[in-house]
Length: 328
Image (cartoon, rainbow, N blue to C red; front, side):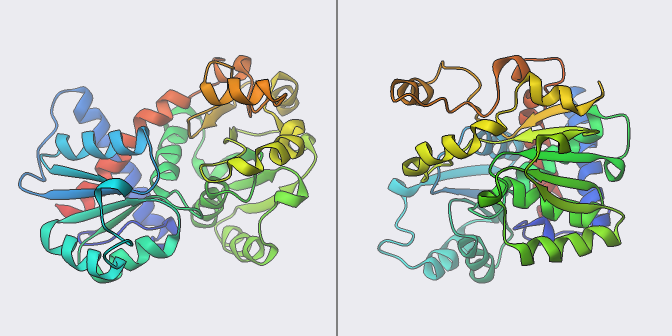
């Protein structure tokens, strides 16, 4: 295992291929140990603060359970419970928290916030999600691929369907540039990411034997090992919902789309939460406005190809690996 002690986890871009592989290997080992009841409290006496500017179920619970399993204590602070950025600057907050805690997790909006926290706190900082990246999620997704597919990750084709410039798509691009699999962003051209960024990451992916491309035709799902999607409007983008539904409805992941894969070995993935039925208040409210905000149909979401809850569980195991590797 490569020594990662003291390192922050802000983006996979900061890590070498072998370091990512080491984290995945450790994730599998820690999962096996938890299942066998043989986990060790390697972080006893450590304290971690979780800063949440954006609410979450999986990220908060995964960090808390991972920390508790390793013996660490956790403090949770949301926007209402913190003066960060309001009565106290980010730099001052980072300096204070770095003296109280052994590590900091941040989930919110600007990437520069986690970078600033890492620069001024003097302790490892973990990115629980920003507008441009979601590294703890992508690590769990890669672990899930290793568990559920019958081929190495670098031999796989991943197709992300929908808003291909969102943080999950960008995280997948970074992963492809590091590990060398084929990544296809499938969605309307108006929602494709910056061409220069795509070109840069595609060049890196090619060095590892992979590729990064963006397409508009659903025929490009052919041969996919992974079909991935995400909600069409993230937190803070609700005012764009009507426009997004109009743009993205042709890219809803339904049976007609997955039939174009042409094989039975694919898996369906989603970072959750997902709109796959009309059983949520948001979906019901949108339906009253004549909007169908489902990015995936129930038939696909609940199918035997779906591994979304395995993904959710693996958030805990991969986060535990990051904590153990950087703090113990």
